[in-house]
Image (cartoon, rainbow, N blue to C red):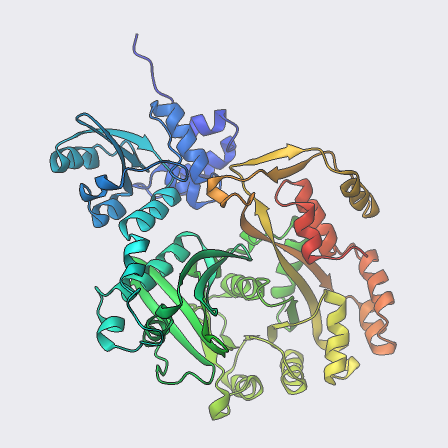
Length: 553
């Protein structure tokens, strides 16, 4: 009797990886020609690794981990880089007339047939994750040593030869492209090019933590700096002052948008490239990490027709992403939304965005004044940095506009004091401020290697102090998917402070921080530390990560 093969979605439900409801929702929402595996990945219900392991079970095709695999480099001449990248395949080994090939989709018989005809071998497919295959292609097809050896003959300081830095086939152009593609594959937020006395260190910031990607010879600094400056329209002859630029390129059909900054140091110019992830910018508010109560409160705040809503936190805490998600939710043809930013990170359709340019007098304050003459409903100010901007923003909110902005403080309650320190009158703060959101980013436990452990005595004490109980903690033990860190991706912690009449009276009378805190507790405000510990209970992050960004009172 012929055995019927279970469908992929049902297998994932049986394995307990997704719920039947998640499968049903995905089947209803996905495009007709979109594969169910890709649709589930897109929605974040499963990881690449989980998909590969279930496919292995469903198809009986082996799963390979390329991170530790001894790949035969001589086989790369059989399959071109373009073919490998387009079809997401990597040759692994050869046995007699069989060629073993790692594939994301081992059921793609057209690719298998093409490979059989072009190589002359019988093709034996194996399953690997998309990220693993892309990383392997970048590592082996552009042989690092070959690139660096070409520069070993360069004398120190030999730099701006035009043919080196502009010719698309030149080693330096290939090297910079490779660094950018690798950063995009690893979902890095920043690339740091650090000149040192004897070498150049290239570091990627992944999930908020810097790690060394590779080390280059010191004598490559001139051409490397020149290439990046040419790409970002900077002055390649100026090495004494900091410069800023922007790069927009397509690499392997992948659009990459970067902000570039140079800084003169004693060993040469340090370069930082910030990768802007367009997908993250247009995030849904539901996907940022708000818990149910905070999401309800924040949604109510931004749906009010007037008032100021401030988002606070240090640099790199995801404030802009939350603001953009809020604007995305409010964006419709019925409202006029105008933003003033420094810089405009993401272009949003249907929203009027202004770039700050202090050289010509376009400051936040000047831009805000101009915006008020443009009949806006909603105004977004990139950052409140001084008294003038704060006062114009407050007046805008008092004259019938909703104003969204960011400010640098440690928590939501400290924001009131910061505005008073700037010189804003307490009665103006009390009458205009609707709410304050404090935000931090913590790393998420890797779903591929996470396992439940007993909490330590110290962890039980921390939870008990906040009136919570913990029985088990989800921790990653480290795997190739997370670069052996135990963490993959980030999630936001929030503290949403909604101002009520009692708080307004406190601000106007004595502005006591302790009274504001008491009132916030009475109002069931979830503080950063509590939101973090609740996310530890859900298995999303660890106690160490929460304590890194939030303090125990």
